Amino acid sequence: DDDPLPLRLLGEALNSDPRLEVIWREGSAPDGLRGACEWAPDVIACDVKMPEYDGYWFLRELRSRHLTTPVV
Image 1 (cartoon, rainbow, N blue to C red):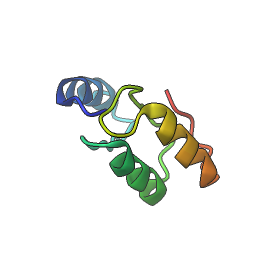
Image 2 (image 1 turned 90 degrees about the vertical axis):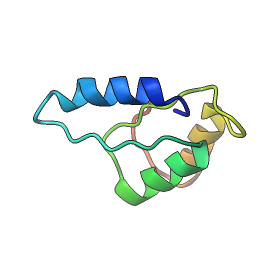
Image 3 (image 1 turned 180 degrees about the vertical axis):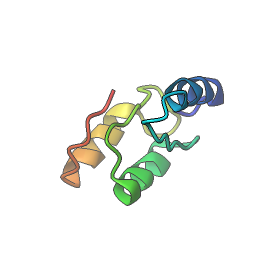
């Protein structure tokens, strides 16, 4: 997500569960893709509307790298 407020709110909500470790980045779809490749998360939350590249681009690129991480 490129909007800091939803990122912060989602991160705070998920971090309230001690069983979860939340890693997120503000920024662009390419930043998120690099993070997904580096960290291999269990799940990814992705916005559809982002500057420059959209969420659909992100999903295509993620799948082209054979990453099967669930995306919401």
